[in-house]
Length: 149
Length: 471
Image (cartoon, rainbow over all chains, first blue to last red; front, side, top):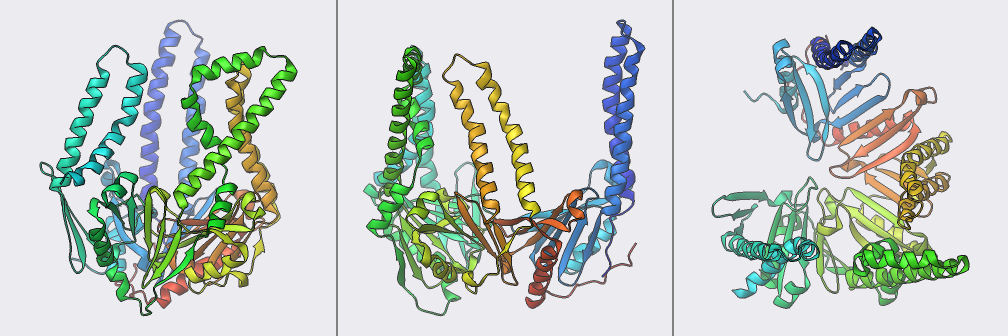
């Protein structure tokens, strides 16, 4: 069976999450810098926003590369997850060792209609497939444990 | 009935002991001792209450456990899920002829169920009932002592154990920090030759005392070490003061560890420990199965515990030659981090205490040296049945995991290993994991194939639903 990718929407959610986080951070810095400039510091302090912007751009770039590298593959015997574009990682678990799946989603995930699937064995958490459509997550459950509805 | 409460009271007392200790040191002239004693009495009542309200019952398939009066708890554990059953008998418990039973299921976060203050007969009956499930599945009627530590081996073990650091840590509060400070002031005031003589004498004294202390602890702890094989269960019992009994189901063993210290190798002995998906009370996640086993008997012992393993027939490969470089770089990084502790050493030139700060970088250095020296003889063996890794130079360890117990196969690859085709691979059972720090990528592929083949052999039910078209 061919490898599948997480839903593309997870990228958009990732961009938004990073944007919100960095916006809050930038706001705090802006207040501090604003007060400093008001107190008579040079305008050169505004340059501090450049590295913050660069960091955000890097995060966006990294998110995209991570998404491109993320694949999972469900075969008759195993579930295999590969990810990481810089540090490459892979996990393989025998299908009958999978004890249960958790489907989680935050408010932003729900807004964009994606869920994350956490794969558990009896002993450990194998990993999280970030960003699937709820339908695919449900199907994954059915594929592994049979139709429950 | 009083018999039932005494160990509970003792336990409650033990729990408040540290608080009591601190309050006696720090609290002169206030009422803290009184308050602490009140807490202790309350704790005692609590313990009695917990005992009175606890009920348990073993049925055909599960153990039912109910406790609590205001807040109630009802816990049922299917007998088939029981990994280990540990019995424990402290000094007071032995005097009163009662036992504590700990039940472990998979997950390895400590005992799932603790039944204390059972009579010895009741505990024995319960143990048999709990292990009944395991007994069904076994055919042969075995009931024999496999291993009993001889007095000779026990003494060998005792003298090859050395616990100087543990001794120092437990001795320091006894001597008192003020007295140590005063002694160190005297030491500083001595002429240089005197300092050397006294220093060497003190170090030697600490080493000898630590050695004796370790030996005494070892004998008290592991005296009477016996391994007994019964249908479906291997029972390990030991202890002269506190008696501990661990019951292991061999079918559940997912990990074996053969370790030896330099001192043990002097007398050609090794230690064999095993791990299941549960824990073993105070022993943690691995239980010792043979304490001081002669080296040449180890393979036979391991093969008896892990069916299908041919330890001597394993095809050992050494790690790729980049492994040494990797160990050096990793060691340098951890040394760089550890050298933070040199800062207080330099900042406190007058204080003799500063020497303690040197302990941390030195211990890191010794770990690095151990790994480096061991890099040459380190190796791994992977086949369809088992994963084995051999590491260390001073403290040698061989770890073995049967592929049948593997749940997850993992890979980690930094970008700079890619051109060499090297990866860090690992296998994970329920609790234990064995990692291959650097192997060719093919090894990882073969691990994956094995997991797939084993799953196919177990006849995994077919995928219930067809996969969707690939996006």
